[in-house]
Image 1 (cartoon, rainbow, N blue to C red):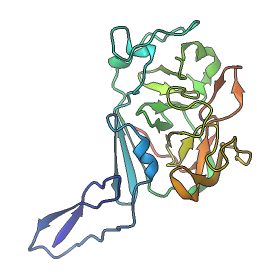
Image 2 (image 1 turned 120 degrees about the horizontal axis):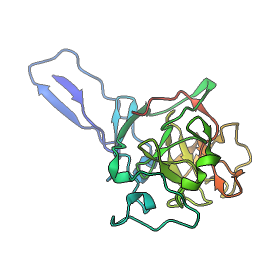
Image 3 (image 1 turned 60 degrees about the horizontal axis):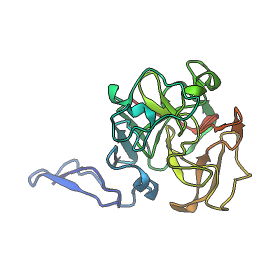
Image 4 (image 1 turned 30 degrees about the horizontal axis):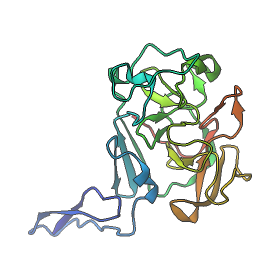
Length: 248
């Protein structure tokens, strides 16, 4: 009997498809111990599709946020008027396809050396939208900061993405923000293990402690707690501590 593994549910239930009762070769062993982290339950199920593929996790997203922003455009149910001083980019969410896929190991490991981030998506937030670093068009973010909406995001070059602390779903707390391209999760500025700002972070704002979704100490990142331009908190200004995977 040949068995092919199918998509695995968040709860870790293993589904199999029987291809032929007469075929006995190439039986694939199914590891029932491989399950998705409970953290993935926090991702918006309308915007993301998350499943296991062997020892990897696949995150498929439509790239859309699930909250209000001026970038939805007037007339949209999720449109909100901009704050004072806001200078929007000339784009709307509805005008672009931000869909993407990220495949990472179920149990990511730290690499022997850190890797710099690049322009474009470096992670996927729990809303489904992208996470970017602290640069904008090969330059510092400060020149484009006026185009960030109330939750630290804008559009460019065609993807709605967050640069700074996304107040729509985390604000000076320990909530899950998303997953980075190296497979490690990133949380708000505070840590669940102490209920306060962590003091043992490495150069990438990461450390190994318990989290809301892991009772065993697990490596993860935090939003940078250093104030930027006297107003913002950059989500991820550092380097990947794991091996980054393409988001495409």
